[in-house]
Length: 143
Image (cartoon, rainbow, N blue to C red; front, side, top):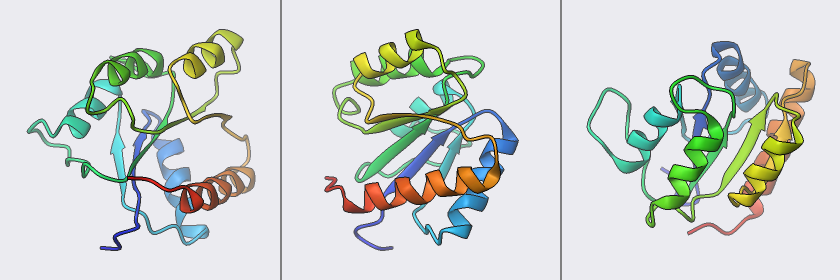
């Protein structure tokens, strides 16, 4: 595996959105490992390496793409928990959501997200967003 590859954890409960992310990655030749969690609880287990059915996300070079509206544990609750765990606190998170609520945006930024992006309506726009994100995280220096 490429030592510069970024392990991306997509925390998303909508199967259509997961499929769109996969298609957008393929269209833009994004080859980073992609891990999928259906809610915040599952994502935390994957990040902590808790034994279960979901694969563990490698400890280094992680990036989280986070939806806010999910069952069991929503995005804001997940962020609060993530930021409370010293080993996970520095993990960069980009919110990718349909929520255009000012309160969600403010709360997310208060929890140190790297960005807040509204999900585009069309697949073409969605693919453009993924390509732009790929360019960004390729340029960023990550531990």
